[in-house]
Length: 271
Ligand code: PXL
Image (cartoon, rainbow, N blue to C red; front, side, top):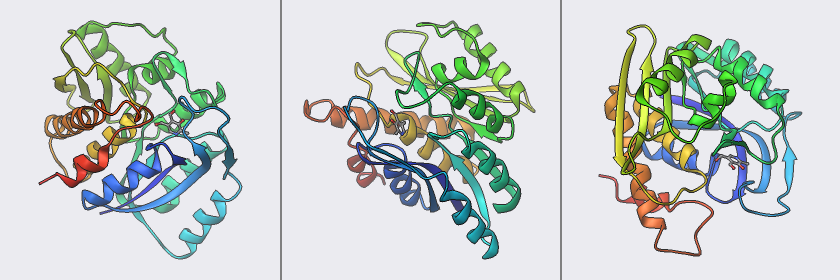
């Protein structure tokens, strides 16, 4: 199983490629990377971070892979900082995916009702164009609201969450996984919708009183590993949710570690 992950390298801060690559590898998935940009840190909570955009380099990398006849079982896109890259994703889908290969889009662009600081509104429109082409998407509720152009709220009923999932699936993807869903104060989890069977799957874990950057990227990487291995949705949602709970529990006692989670310890303890 071979995947290419297209997202930024945040050199420090435990998110995007610095978490996806180790997690997918540990789950036995060969992972190539296509860095969309290089930042000194992620953009959540660090001041004066540097950004070096790689949009101009990407077609050269993609074309070299095409010349080499390289194919992937999946393309997994995450944080994209420049809207010109969305067309490249469409091109990669046509030219680099193996027969039956999957386009997986984590529209990592927003959280807690807000777009990430370094992004502009055109990223939302661009993200929608690749969500349309995707087999699997994994937005959080903020990203879902932006993709659907509906207001973000602080709380949702089960009926409202199901409605969001159905509307997201109408944009295109066969499988939609919505993260950060909570109907009661003590539980948080993810709900999935499969378009062809109109079936919902869900998993809820113990609510944790803190949130950290990078957990969405880790959740997606664990869930994607399960998806590519053909695991049932409830099972892979359970694995991904519990993985994140463990990461947060390992991180919370360390007050100096607010920028990301200690996922390495959770990976190392996996049986
Ligand atoms: O974890 C998502 C993410 C990815 N990449 C960059 C980010 C963030 C979240 O803030 O800033 C650069």
